[in-house]
Amino acid sequence: MKIRSLMVATLIFLALGGTLYWSEHRKPTDESAKVSADTPPAILKLDETTINRVELKKKDADPIVLAKNASGTWQIAQPKSFSADQNAVSGTLATLSSLNSERLVEDKSSDLKQYGLGQPAIEVNITEKDNRTQRLLIGDDTPAGGAVYAMLAGDPRIFTMASYNRTSIDKSLNDLREKRLLTESADKISRLELIRTNQEIEFGRNKGEWQILKPKPLRADSVQVGELVGKVTDARMDLSGSDKDLKDAASAFGRATPVATAKVTDQSGPQELQVRKNKDLYYAKSSVVDGAYKVDSSLGQALDKGLDDFRNKKLFDFGFNDPSKIEMHNGSKAVFLSKNGSDWWSNGKKMDPGSMQRYISDLRDLAASKFVESGFANPTIAVTVTSDDGKRVENVSIAKSVSGYIASRENEPTLYQLDSSAVDALQKAADDIKPAPTPGK
Image (cartoon, rainbow, N blue to C red; front, side, top):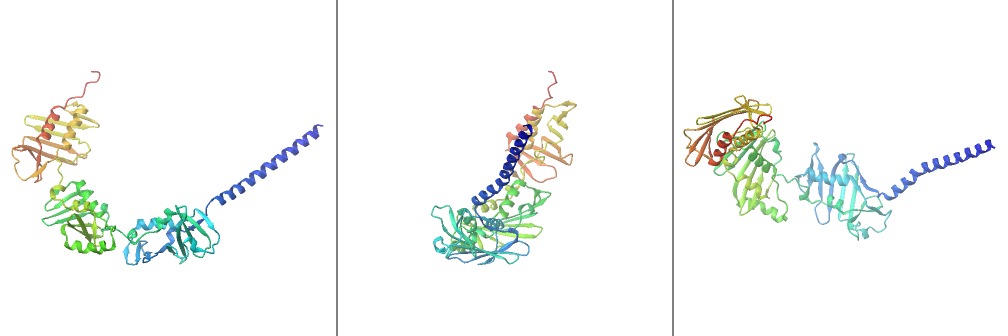
Protein backbone atom coordinates (compact mmCIF):
# COMPACT_ATOMS: atom_id res chain seq x y z
CA MET A 1 0.00 0.00 0.00
CA LYS A 2 2.83 2.33 0.91
CA ILE A 3 4.67 1.52 -2.34
CA ARG A 4 1.55 2.23 -4.38
CA SER A 5 0.99 5.57 -2.66
CA LEU A 6 4.59 6.52 -3.31
CA MET A 7 4.27 5.73 -7.04
CA VAL A 8 1.10 7.84 -7.31
CA ALA A 9 2.81 10.77 -5.60
CA THR A 10 5.81 10.45 -7.92
CA LEU A 11 3.58 10.49 -11.03
CA ILE A 12 1.75 13.60 -9.77
CA PHE A 13 5.07 15.37 -9.09
CA LEU A 14 6.36 14.54 -12.59
CA ALA A 15 3.13 15.78 -14.15
CA LEU A 16 3.28 19.08 -12.26
CA GLY A 17 6.96 19.51 -13.15
CA GLY A 18 6.25 18.93 -16.83
CA THR A 19 3.41 21.44 -16.80
CA LEU A 20 5.58 24.05 -15.12
CA TYR A 21 8.44 23.45 -17.60
CA TRP A 22 6.06 23.79 -20.57
CA SER A 23 4.47 26.98 -19.25
CA GLU A 24 7.79 28.63 -18.45
CA HIS A 25 9.24 27.79 -21.86
CA ARG A 26 6.11 28.80 -23.75
CA LYS A 27 5.63 32.12 -21.93
CA PRO A 28 8.53 34.10 -23.52
CA THR A 29 7.46 32.95 -26.98
CA ASP A 30 3.91 34.19 -26.43
CA GLU A 31 5.04 37.51 -24.95
CA SER A 32 7.61 37.97 -27.70
CA ALA A 33 4.91 37.44 -30.30
CA LYS A 34 2.68 40.00 -28.54
CA VAL A 35 5.47 42.60 -28.31
CA SER A 36 6.35 42.05 -31.97
CA ALA A 37 2.72 42.53 -32.98
CA ASP A 38 2.30 45.69 -30.89
CA THR A 39 5.59 47.35 -31.88
CA PRO A 40 5.35 49.48 -35.05
CA PRO A 41 8.06 48.59 -37.56
CA ALA A 42 10.99 50.93 -38.13
CA ILE A 43 11.06 52.86 -41.39
CA LEU A 44 14.81 53.60 -41.34
CA LYS A 45 17.63 52.34 -39.15
CA LEU A 46 20.99 53.81 -40.17
CA ASP A 47 24.34 54.58 -38.61
CA GLU A 48 24.31 58.39 -38.55
CA THR A 49 28.11 58.54 -38.75
CA THR A 50 28.13 56.77 -42.14
CA ILE A 51 25.81 59.30 -43.83
CA ASN A 52 27.79 61.66 -46.07
CA ARG A 53 25.16 63.16 -48.37
CA VAL A 54 21.50 64.14 -48.05
CA GLU A 55 19.32 65.57 -50.80
CA LEU A 56 16.06 67.19 -49.75
CA LYS A 57 13.49 67.70 -52.50
CA LYS A 58 10.22 69.57 -52.03
CA LYS A 59 7.50 70.63 -54.45
CA ASP A 60 8.06 74.00 -56.10
CA ALA A 61 11.49 74.48 -54.50
CA ASP A 62 15.07 73.93 -55.54
CA PRO A 63 16.60 70.76 -54.10
CA ILE A 64 18.87 71.23 -51.09
CA VAL A 65 21.99 69.09 -51.04
CA LEU A 66 23.97 68.61 -47.85
CA ALA A 67 27.43 67.08 -48.15
CA LYS A 68 30.06 66.20 -45.59
CA ASN A 69 33.55 67.47 -46.43
CA ALA A 70 36.89 65.75 -45.78
CA SER A 71 37.10 67.15 -42.26
CA GLY A 72 33.67 65.79 -41.37
CA THR A 73 31.92 69.17 -41.46
CA TRP A 74 28.56 69.48 -43.19
CA GLN A 75 28.22 72.00 -46.02
CA ILE A 76 25.34 73.09 -48.21
CA ALA A 77 26.33 72.22 -51.77
CA GLN A 78 23.09 73.18 -53.59
CA PRO A 79 21.28 75.34 -54.62
CA LYS A 80 24.21 77.54 -53.54
CA SER A 81 27.34 76.89 -51.56
CA PHE A 82 26.91 77.85 -47.91
CA SER A 83 28.29 76.80 -44.57
CA ALA A 84 25.75 74.62 -42.78
CA ASP A 85 24.41 74.93 -39.25
CA GLN A 86 25.95 71.78 -37.77
CA ASN A 87 23.35 71.52 -35.00
CA ALA A 88 20.44 71.86 -37.42
CA VAL A 89 21.90 69.20 -39.73
CA SER A 90 22.58 66.88 -36.79
CA GLY A 91 18.97 67.18 -35.67
CA THR A 92 17.70 66.17 -39.11
CA LEU A 93 20.18 63.28 -39.37
CA ALA A 94 19.21 62.01 -35.92
CA THR A 95 15.57 61.79 -37.05
CA LEU A 96 16.40 60.11 -40.37
CA SER A 97 18.81 57.55 -38.92
CA SER A 98 16.28 56.26 -36.39
CA LEU A 99 12.92 56.82 -38.04
CA ASN A 100 10.08 54.82 -36.53
CA SER A 101 6.57 54.41 -37.84
CA GLU A 102 3.40 54.79 -35.81
CA ARG A 103 1.73 51.93 -37.63
CA LEU A 104 1.85 49.83 -40.79
CA VAL A 105 -1.03 50.87 -43.06
CA GLU A 106 -0.59 48.39 -45.91
CA ASP A 107 1.91 45.70 -46.80
CA LYS A 108 1.47 46.61 -50.44
CA SER A 109 -0.58 49.39 -52.01
CA SER A 110 -1.72 49.53 -55.59
CA ASP A 111 -2.67 53.21 -55.32
CA LEU A 112 0.01 55.53 -53.88
CA LYS A 113 -1.98 58.64 -54.83
CA GLN A 114 -4.50 58.13 -52.04
CA TYR A 115 -1.65 58.66 -49.55
CA GLY A 116 -0.04 61.55 -51.40
CA LEU A 117 2.92 59.32 -52.25
CA GLY A 118 2.47 59.26 -56.03
CA GLN A 119 4.02 62.72 -56.14
CA PRO A 120 5.32 63.08 -52.57
CA ALA A 121 5.46 66.45 -50.87
CA ILE A 122 8.95 65.65 -49.59
CA GLU A 123 11.58 63.29 -50.94
CA VAL A 124 14.82 62.63 -49.08
CA ASN A 125 17.73 60.85 -50.74
CA ILE A 126 20.29 59.56 -48.24
CA THR A 127 23.74 58.36 -49.29
CA GLU A 128 26.14 56.47 -47.02
CA LYS A 129 29.91 55.97 -47.28
CA ASP A 130 29.56 52.71 -49.20
CA ASN A 131 27.36 54.54 -51.75
CA ARG A 132 24.31 52.69 -50.49
CA THR A 133 21.27 54.94 -50.90
CA GLN A 134 17.85 55.17 -49.32
CA ARG A 135 14.96 57.26 -50.62
CA LEU A 136 12.31 58.35 -48.16
CA LEU A 137 8.96 59.58 -49.48
CA ILE A 138 6.64 61.66 -47.30
CA GLY A 139 3.04 62.19 -48.39
CA ASP A 140 -0.21 63.62 -47.05
CA ASP A 141 -1.39 64.11 -43.51
CA THR A 142 -3.55 61.33 -42.12
CA PRO A 143 -7.29 62.13 -41.82
CA ALA A 144 -7.10 62.12 -38.01
CA GLY A 145 -4.08 64.45 -38.02
CA GLY A 146 -0.91 64.20 -35.97
CA ALA A 147 0.74 61.86 -38.48
CA VAL A 148 1.72 61.62 -42.15
CA TYR A 149 2.03 58.81 -44.66
CA ALA A 150 5.53 57.65 -45.56
CA MET A 151 7.34 54.90 -47.40
CA LEU A 152 10.76 53.90 -48.69
CA ALA A 153 11.33 53.69 -52.44
CA GLY A 154 11.59 50.01 -53.38
CA ASP A 155 9.63 48.92 -50.30
CA PRO A 156 5.89 48.36 -50.99
CA ARG A 157 4.84 49.01 -47.38
CA ILE A 158 2.95 52.17 -46.43
CA PHE A 159 3.49 53.60 -42.95
CA THR A 160 2.31 56.47 -40.87
CA MET A 161 4.87 58.47 -38.89
CA ALA A 162 4.48 61.26 -36.37
CA SER A 163 4.10 64.77 -37.78
CA TYR A 164 6.93 66.03 -35.57
CA ASN A 165 9.31 63.76 -37.50
CA ARG A 166 8.29 65.47 -40.73
CA THR A 167 8.89 68.85 -39.06
CA SER A 168 12.42 67.75 -38.15
CA ILE A 169 13.08 66.67 -41.75
CA ASP A 170 11.24 69.41 -43.64
CA LYS A 171 13.87 72.16 -43.43
CA SER A 172 14.31 75.17 -45.67
CA LEU A 173 17.62 76.45 -46.98
CA ASN A 174 17.63 79.19 -44.32
CA ASP A 175 16.88 76.64 -41.59
CA LEU A 176 20.01 74.70 -42.54
CA ARG A 177 22.35 77.63 -43.17
CA GLU A 178 25.02 78.64 -40.69
CA LYS A 179 23.70 81.90 -39.30
CA ARG A 180 26.74 82.99 -37.33
CA LEU A 181 28.47 85.95 -38.90
CA LEU A 182 31.79 85.11 -37.22
CA THR A 183 33.04 81.58 -36.66
CA GLU A 184 35.47 82.17 -33.79
CA SER A 185 34.49 81.07 -30.28
CA ALA A 186 34.22 83.63 -27.48
CA ASP A 187 36.43 81.63 -25.11
CA LYS A 188 39.24 81.47 -27.69
CA ILE A 189 39.40 85.21 -28.42
CA SER A 190 42.64 86.81 -27.24
CA ARG A 191 42.18 90.29 -28.74
CA LEU A 192 39.26 92.55 -29.63
CA GLU A 193 39.37 95.90 -31.43
CA LEU A 194 36.35 98.18 -31.33
CA ILE A 195 36.60 100.85 -34.01
CA ARG A 196 34.12 103.71 -33.89
CA THR A 197 34.03 106.99 -35.80
CA ASN A 198 35.61 109.00 -33.00
CA GLN A 199 37.42 106.35 -30.99
CA GLU A 200 39.39 103.11 -31.23
CA ILE A 201 39.56 100.75 -28.28
CA GLU A 202 41.72 97.64 -28.15
CA PHE A 203 41.34 94.90 -25.55
CA GLY A 204 43.74 92.06 -24.80
CA ARG A 205 43.17 88.95 -22.68
CA ASN A 206 45.84 87.38 -20.51
CA LYS A 207 45.13 84.39 -18.27
CA GLY A 208 41.41 84.98 -18.56
CA GLU A 209 41.55 88.66 -17.57
CA TRP A 210 40.82 91.47 -20.00
CA GLN A 211 42.87 94.67 -20.14
CA ILE A 212 42.47 97.84 -22.19
CA LEU A 213 45.52 98.29 -24.43
CA LYS A 214 44.43 101.31 -26.48
CA PRO A 215 44.07 104.27 -26.45
CA LYS A 216 46.31 103.64 -23.40
CA PRO A 217 46.80 100.83 -20.89
CA LEU A 218 43.89 100.83 -18.43
CA ARG A 219 42.14 98.40 -16.13
CA ALA A 220 39.17 96.80 -17.88
CA ASP A 221 35.87 95.59 -16.52
CA SER A 222 36.21 91.95 -17.56
CA VAL A 223 32.48 91.35 -17.25
CA GLN A 224 31.62 94.19 -19.65
CA VAL A 225 34.33 93.20 -22.15
CA GLY A 226 33.30 89.55 -21.91
CA GLU A 227 29.69 90.48 -22.69
CA LEU A 228 30.85 92.47 -25.73
CA VAL A 229 32.93 89.52 -26.99
CA GLY A 230 29.93 87.26 -26.50
CA LYS A 231 27.63 89.57 -28.47
CA VAL A 232 30.09 89.85 -31.35
CA THR A 233 30.87 86.14 -31.64
CA ASP A 234 27.20 85.23 -31.25
CA ALA A 235 26.06 87.68 -33.95
CA ARG A 236 23.63 85.99 -36.30
CA MET A 237 22.05 86.97 -39.59
CA ASP A 238 18.31 87.50 -39.54
CA LEU A 239 16.93 85.32 -42.35
CA SER A 240 13.30 85.53 -41.30
CA GLY A 241 12.19 87.93 -44.07
CA SER A 242 11.26 87.29 -47.67
CA ASP A 243 13.82 86.77 -50.43
CA LYS A 244 13.30 90.41 -51.38
CA ASP A 245 14.03 91.51 -47.80
CA LEU A 246 17.26 89.52 -47.83
CA LYS A 247 18.32 91.06 -51.14
CA ASP A 248 17.42 94.54 -49.91
CA ALA A 249 19.67 94.13 -46.85
CA ALA A 250 22.78 94.66 -48.98
CA SER A 251 21.59 98.01 -50.30
CA ALA A 252 20.28 99.00 -46.85
CA PHE A 253 23.72 98.32 -45.38
CA GLY A 254 25.28 100.60 -47.99
CA ARG A 255 22.93 103.48 -47.09
CA ALA A 256 23.16 102.99 -43.32
CA THR A 257 25.29 104.97 -40.86
CA PRO A 258 28.33 103.16 -39.43
CA VAL A 259 28.01 102.20 -35.75
CA ALA A 260 31.27 100.32 -35.20
CA THR A 261 33.60 97.68 -36.58
CA ALA A 262 34.64 94.83 -34.33
CA LYS A 263 37.81 92.84 -35.06
CA VAL A 264 38.35 89.66 -33.08
CA THR A 265 41.49 87.50 -33.09
CA ASP A 266 42.17 83.95 -31.98
CA GLN A 267 44.88 81.44 -32.91
CA SER A 268 43.46 81.09 -36.42
CA GLY A 269 43.75 84.82 -37.14
CA PRO A 270 41.46 87.87 -37.26
CA GLN A 271 37.82 88.17 -38.30
CA GLU A 272 35.90 91.41 -38.78
CA LEU A 273 32.29 92.50 -38.37
CA GLN A 274 30.97 95.86 -39.57
CA VAL A 275 27.68 97.07 -38.08
CA ARG A 276 25.56 99.95 -39.42
CA LYS A 277 22.23 101.49 -38.49
CA ASN A 278 19.38 102.77 -40.63
CA LYS A 279 16.62 104.30 -38.49
CA ASP A 280 15.86 101.58 -35.93
CA LEU A 281 17.30 98.70 -37.94
CA TYR A 282 20.83 97.32 -37.75
CA TYR A 283 22.76 95.60 -40.53
CA ALA A 284 26.07 93.76 -40.49
CA LYS A 285 28.69 92.57 -42.93
CA SER A 286 31.29 89.94 -42.05
CA SER A 287 34.74 89.15 -43.37
CA VAL A 288 33.93 85.41 -43.41
CA VAL A 289 30.41 85.42 -44.93
CA ASP A 290 29.36 86.93 -48.24
CA GLY A 291 26.64 89.57 -48.22
CA ALA A 292 25.08 91.93 -45.70
CA TYR A 293 22.34 90.96 -43.30
CA LYS A 294 19.87 92.39 -40.86
CA VAL A 295 20.92 91.71 -37.25
CA ASP A 296 19.38 92.04 -33.82
CA SER A 297 19.40 95.53 -32.34
CA SER A 298 21.15 94.27 -29.18
CA LEU A 299 24.34 93.74 -31.22
CA GLY A 300 24.36 97.35 -32.40
CA GLN A 301 23.66 98.62 -28.90
CA ALA A 302 26.51 96.52 -27.47
CA LEU A 303 28.95 98.05 -29.97
CA ASP A 304 27.70 101.61 -29.50
CA LYS A 305 29.63 102.21 -26.26
CA GLY A 306 32.59 104.35 -25.29
CA LEU A 307 35.83 103.73 -23.44
CA ASP A 308 34.48 104.47 -19.96
CA ASP A 309 31.78 101.81 -20.36
CA PHE A 310 34.52 99.16 -20.42
CA ARG A 311 36.81 100.54 -17.70
CA ASN A 312 37.03 98.93 -14.29
CA LYS A 313 35.45 101.30 -11.80
CA LYS A 314 36.26 99.23 -8.71
CA LEU A 315 39.07 100.55 -6.50
CA PHE A 316 40.18 97.06 -5.43
CA ASP A 317 40.64 93.84 -7.38
CA PHE A 318 40.49 91.25 -4.59
CA GLY A 319 36.92 90.44 -5.64
CA PHE A 320 35.02 87.85 -3.63
CA ASN A 321 38.15 86.31 -2.10
CA ASP A 322 38.82 87.87 1.27
CA PRO A 323 42.20 89.63 1.55
CA SER A 324 44.84 88.47 4.01
CA LYS A 325 45.99 91.88 5.28
CA ILE A 326 44.44 95.36 5.47
CA GLU A 327 46.05 98.58 6.62
CA MET A 328 44.06 101.81 6.72
CA HIS A 329 45.17 105.28 7.77
CA ASN A 330 42.54 107.98 8.21
CA GLY A 331 44.08 111.12 9.61
CA SER A 332 45.38 110.21 13.06
CA LYS A 333 43.50 106.87 13.07
CA ALA A 334 45.14 103.66 11.92
CA VAL A 335 43.81 100.12 11.50
CA PHE A 336 46.07 97.07 11.09
CA LEU A 337 44.31 93.80 10.34
CA SER A 338 45.59 90.35 9.37
CA LYS A 339 43.84 87.08 8.73
CA ASN A 340 44.86 83.73 10.20
CA GLY A 341 42.73 80.85 8.98
CA SER A 342 39.15 82.13 9.14
CA ASP A 343 39.82 84.67 11.90
CA TRP A 344 40.83 88.31 11.72
CA TRP A 345 43.29 89.76 14.24
CA SER A 346 44.42 93.24 15.23
CA ASN A 347 47.15 94.00 17.77
CA GLY A 348 46.93 90.46 19.15
CA LYS A 349 43.14 90.57 19.53
CA LYS A 350 40.66 88.47 17.62
CA MET A 351 38.15 90.66 15.75
CA ASP A 352 34.38 90.32 15.58
CA PRO A 353 33.51 88.49 12.30
CA GLY A 354 30.36 90.51 11.61
CA SER A 355 32.01 93.92 11.87
CA MET A 356 34.95 92.68 9.79
CA GLN A 357 32.73 91.42 6.97
CA ARG A 358 30.84 94.73 6.84
CA TYR A 359 34.14 96.58 6.54
CA ILE A 360 35.52 94.22 3.85
CA SER A 361 32.24 94.46 1.94
CA ASP A 362 32.47 98.27 1.89
CA LEU A 363 36.08 98.01 0.63
CA ARG A 364 35.02 95.57 -2.08
CA ASP A 365 32.15 97.78 -3.25
CA LEU A 366 34.15 101.00 -3.36
CA ALA A 367 33.80 102.15 -6.98
CA ALA A 368 33.97 105.27 -9.11
CA SER A 369 30.83 107.10 -10.11
CA LYS A 370 32.91 108.47 -13.00
CA PHE A 371 36.51 109.10 -14.06
CA VAL A 372 38.07 112.56 -13.78
CA GLU A 373 41.26 114.15 -15.06
CA SER A 374 42.17 116.36 -12.07
CA GLY A 375 41.27 117.41 -8.53
CA PHE A 376 43.32 114.91 -6.54
CA ALA A 377 45.40 116.62 -3.82
CA ASN A 378 46.30 116.17 -0.15
CA PRO A 379 44.95 112.64 0.42
CA THR A 380 43.64 112.03 3.94
CA ILE A 381 42.85 108.30 3.66
CA ALA A 382 45.29 105.57 2.61
CA VAL A 383 44.36 101.89 2.33
CA THR A 384 46.67 98.94 1.55
CA VAL A 385 45.05 95.59 0.81
CA THR A 386 47.04 92.36 0.39
CA SER A 387 45.35 89.37 -1.28
CA ASP A 388 45.94 86.34 -3.49
CA ASP A 389 48.38 84.72 -1.02
CA GLY A 390 50.44 87.88 -0.88
CA LYS A 391 50.85 88.15 -4.68
CA ARG A 392 48.57 91.18 -5.01
CA VAL A 393 49.19 94.36 -3.01
CA GLU A 394 46.90 97.33 -3.77
CA ASN A 395 47.55 100.83 -2.47
CA VAL A 396 44.74 103.37 -2.72
CA SER A 397 44.79 107.01 -1.61
CA ILE A 398 41.63 109.08 -1.14
CA ALA A 399 41.41 112.87 -1.03
CA LYS A 400 38.53 115.21 -0.29
CA SER A 401 37.28 117.21 -3.27
CA VAL A 402 34.66 119.83 -4.03
CA SER A 403 32.20 117.23 -5.33
CA GLY A 404 32.98 114.46 -2.86
CA TYR A 405 36.15 112.35 -2.91
CA ILE A 406 38.77 111.47 -5.52
CA ALA A 407 40.84 108.29 -5.30
CA SER A 408 44.06 107.17 -6.94
CA ARG A 409 45.61 103.72 -7.21
CA GLU A 410 49.37 103.49 -6.85
CA ASN A 411 51.30 103.58 -10.16
CA GLU A 412 48.15 104.26 -12.21
CA PRO A 413 47.20 107.53 -13.93
CA THR A 414 43.46 107.05 -13.46
CA LEU A 415 41.53 109.23 -11.01
CA TYR A 416 38.27 107.85 -9.58
CA GLN A 417 35.44 110.15 -8.54
CA LEU A 418 33.78 108.65 -5.42
CA ASP A 419 30.42 109.45 -3.88
CA SER A 420 30.70 110.91 -0.40
CA SER A 421 28.23 108.35 0.95
CA ALA A 422 30.49 105.45 -0.06
CA VAL A 423 33.58 106.91 1.65
CA ASP A 424 31.58 107.91 4.73
CA ALA A 425 30.23 104.35 4.98
CA LEU A 426 33.77 102.94 4.71
CA GLN A 427 35.06 105.19 7.50
CA LYS A 428 32.14 104.27 9.74
CA ALA A 429 32.67 100.56 9.06
CA ALA A 430 36.34 100.97 10.05
CA ASP A 431 35.35 102.73 13.28
CA ASP A 432 32.82 99.97 14.05
CA ILE A 433 35.36 97.13 13.92
CA LYS A 434 35.47 95.63 17.40
CA PRO A 435 37.06 92.71 19.21
CA ALA A 436 35.24 89.39 19.22
CA PRO A 437 33.20 88.64 22.35
CA THR A 438 35.12 86.83 25.05
CA PRO A 439 33.85 83.23 25.39
CA GLY A 440 31.48 82.87 28.32
CA LYS A 441 30.63 86.54 28.50
